[in-house]
Image (cartoon, rainbow, N blue to C red; front, side):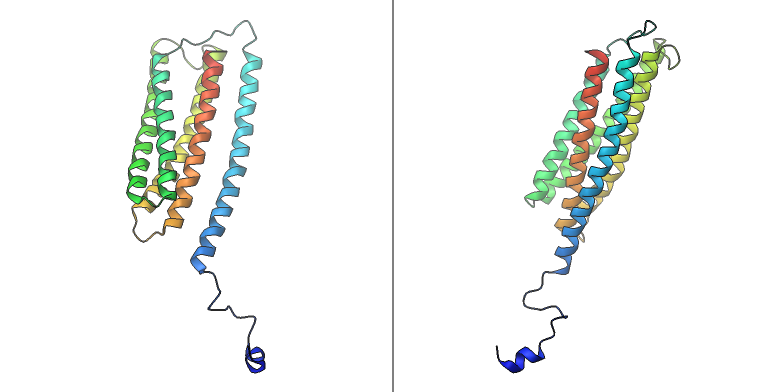
Amino acid sequence: MSILSQISTKPWLPDDNNKVPRNADRGTGRLADNKVGLWVFLAVVSSLFLILGNAYVARRGFEDWHALPELGLLWFNTGLLILSSIALQWSKLSASRGHRESVKLSLLVGGFLACGFLFGQLYAWHQLSEMGYFVSSNPANSFFYLITGIHGLHLLGGLVALVRATFRAWSESESEQVYLISVSLCSVYWHFLLLVWLIFFGLMFFS
């Protein structure tokens, strides 16, 4: 480079030859920020469920504790949530490979299965109430309705994010980086909710 060209160089301006695309920077930064936000949120939610779990274990040692009957419907609901989590993992892998059509299909399947889980949980509540297991009848009943209710609310919130990710996957104006972020975060959240449910399901009926 000549002395004249060095003098005329403006270092405060981006170099057109070497600059990174603005959209790439924005996408990478958004991915990092959203990941941090999600993990902070999961840490808070984990603390909440940990408190509930400790309270459940401590309370069931009293004499007035009468365990709920094991409903076959809860096994079916658990299977739905497992399949929903698998579908979200499938969508994440498809998004990373650029298979947009597979992402669309897996998101729809995962959302449909998650809705089935929620309706199944509501029907389990109905079955228990028909059998006389009301919220105030027994401490075990209260904990069951409380735990499943809080878990269901978190899953319902996840469905809102899943719907947004689905719209982004179907929108041709959204870049692959943008909907990859949404799908990746949804899959992590789904795996977390599945783990929470499996722990409490085992705690309530098999411990």
